[in-house]
Length: 175
Image (cartoon, rainbow, N blue to C red; front, side, top):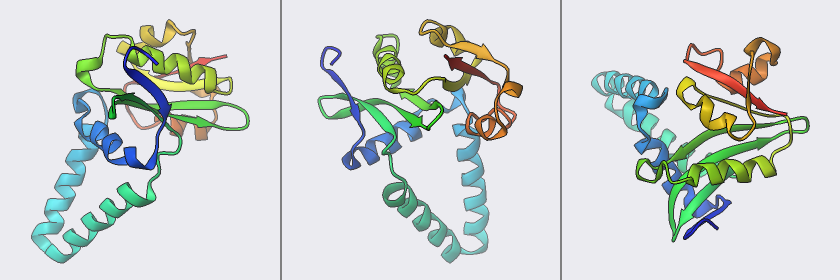
């Protein structure tokens, strides 16, 4: 526990709040904005051409996001029932991967995200991989992560870390 904050595994009841974190994340910080704009444009094209298909696609997306998509690999930062941050820890037989670390803007700079990273380092199988934007390298280096060349990683891991999608991200590893 960090003051009034608790780090715990995500539960089914957290799905809506985790989705809200993704939707409210400052999209200028990543590919979320690009994806959202593409979805909106495609949806508008479908809406103009076929309202029924538009409705069907959105219903399918809602069903997927809130019933099929599970957050079983997610850890949340709970502030008296309000989810203020989350991250996904994917543990495999040979390594772990950290993705989707998000902390609400008003809670950044208060060591809450750091506490979550430290906790997940303890939970993770080493080597522990992540990708981040260049401006966050120093944040992760404080925990012992080092920059690694994408070419040294398997193609599957490169894809999982979004290294081959034209994003301005760098791979890091904790051995």
